[in-house]
Length: 149
Image (cartoon, rainbow, N blue to C red):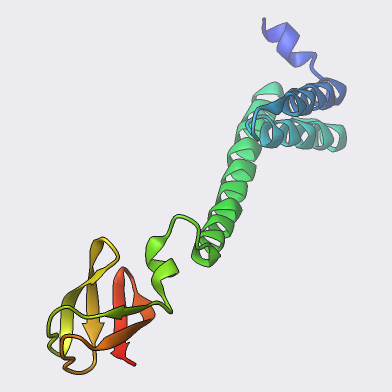
């Protein structure tokens, strides 16, 4: 078994990397992409430096972990930015700009208001009488910031 591992050259690693990239084309959602790139990196490294089979596999594991982690970090930051700019399925963001008539008096500070068929946490900068029309001007997390019209 060890003789077989010692006979692996850079062409084997490059072929292994290409095979993994071909599997990625089947639609594995990125699972084989970074592993395939890592195998090709090991092939390039082995083509430049004579390293033993233990170091080849250690390099392959290290490259796989590093490339996968870097991709995960990049994707996580993109997802956070995308979620911050998205209004779909985020009802509180869709409420900004709407006007509502109050059914009860509100004291300055935190309160609850009825918008549509739901009750929402809200914050007012002044006392507001019932019957007054208010506008939802901003959000603070899931708290609606309101002011009278």
